[in-house]
Amino acid sequence: KAGVTQTPRYLIKTRGQQVTLSCSPISGHRSVSWYQQTPGQGLQFLFEYFSETQRNKGNFPGRFSGRQFSNSRSEMNVSTLELGDSALYLCASSLSGLGWTGEQYFGPGTRLTVT
Amino acid sequence: GENVEQHPSTLSVQEGDSAVIKCTYSDSASNYFPWYKQELGKGPQLIIDIRSNVGEKKDQRIAVTLNKTAKHFSLHITETQPEDSAVYFCAAPSEGDDMRFGAGTRLTVKP
Image 1 (cartoon, one colour):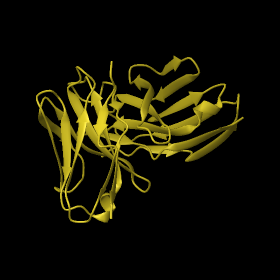
Image 2: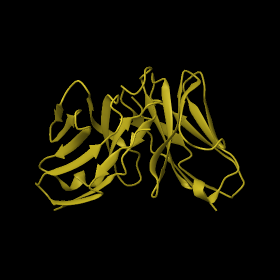
Image 3: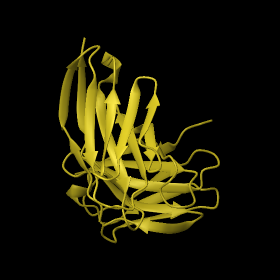
Image 4: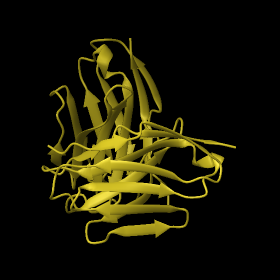
């Protein structure tokens, strides 16, 4: 079974621009979560989608948004990029439909650099 | 919300020795505790997890113990090998169902 895939793997953007990242979960998984990983803040939860609905949201500004499609693929968007948005963005998929009792499997991440 | 504290931040052991990493959490309702291993340039990989209805779980050289009363759980790696060198993260769900991660432990296994 193929793992979680994320595209692109690397991205360089300029302050003020917007960016869209894509995540394809493991086949059959309906939950997709997004995380931001930085050396200073560690792994921080952005949001979780299940069956095309945002089920949980972390403490990030409204510039960070996402969506999930009927095939469970998910995208996240960051608008008006800031230097501090430079990070590794990780996507994780899970079968679980009820809270955090199921295993999450992470993709390799998208390394975003904002200049 | 849930705070997950992880110690130590770095750990260096000789090949063949054991390594122990500890995490504490604050939300009594937390019921699922995974551990992840992250190698350079890769996403975190789930290596073992434990649910609140058991106190210990073992998978070959890796084990996790859970003390719900004290709100802490630990990762134990025995007979460490150089390929165990990586950053390890613990995690616990918080109220509101977001997953909180520890700050990570960089484990170095010296040959």
